[in-house]
Image 1 (tube, one colour):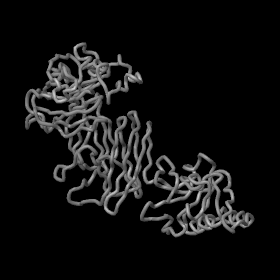
Image 2 (cartoon, helix red, strand yellow):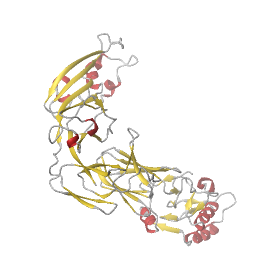
Image 3 (cartoon, helix red, strand yellow):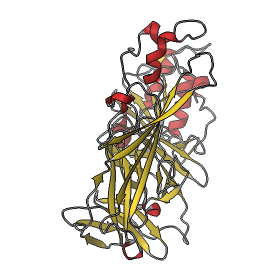
Image 4 (cartoon, helix red, strand yellow):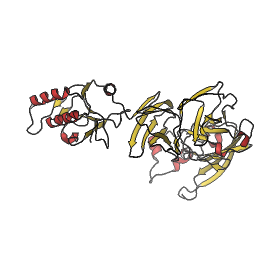
Length: 452
């Protein structure tokens, strides 16, 4: 069905007709034979719950008849702004009949009027709600897909970090699908009523979260969950034998949590060590440089230099690395709080490793063991399974772009026998040194496991 979609949380909820064409006829309406079931047009897909006719739409007599049929079949029709104009077609040029039939349509029980810009309010006032609705202090874009056994919502946070909640018209069991690893984990913090599931989210800029719904597995799925929690609860897991386990970080006062089984708990967190930033990094910088013969593309020059960094800074701030392109291997170490060891006696202590800003890509081994791929838009990783007693070593491997080195030899380069485009355009300016390497903000956040 050709249409313009209404952008926002009503996406895939209703088509706009009359804005995507100069006129509205059964041919471009394409719903003359569509079936309305329980107030839903084309219920198998895309399952529209309303149809909106844009202001000043040009409508033929046959299209008007199609709209009347849909309204009589219990599909809500919203007429936006000024009345539609008559579009004569073939031998159907009776403008008076058009006005008469339009008046009949407007008087129908399922036909509503809305001023321009107030369509969402009108939909709410007649009892329609989107499949996925959001409340946030940022900008979130959502998409909903469903199949017979599995449905999922994609929530994308545009540019900046934001907090809020997403309300999804599904009451099956919710799961998070990790778009980087494919891992499926149960959503353990949400509220649910008879018609929808509300999930609180905190998203980094450009981060995407995928929430899936499927029928409950009585043997493996959680039997209860959090309904309210503190920001000091970093994560949670569920085990059919042990129950719900919270990962609680340091706080100067007790925190409160509420469970779906009615239990409320106060948790003391003052004894948990606070988060700290990793420092005293050893950097091995792998330099990639051109050979003396620029035509010898198979003889790239590579060599390493080492640098001791009390704290992290961009390569653009390290004189010896300002014109270097290659790969950075960063290493540092720390001990597991609170007793500098991690053993069976204090196995309830864990830690998250977080990176405030990943420029391009990132690989992280802990104690020589590679971690699963992190979400580069929100690089926060539970490293508890890889921690060991005593000293722990973290390595961060990051690539850099070639620009910082190429800018130093760009006058010697040719592209298809011509001057390189950056020299022609002057973009980026040849004096610009791009940020590179591992940036500040790499932190360890200890947590304690609390069984609820």
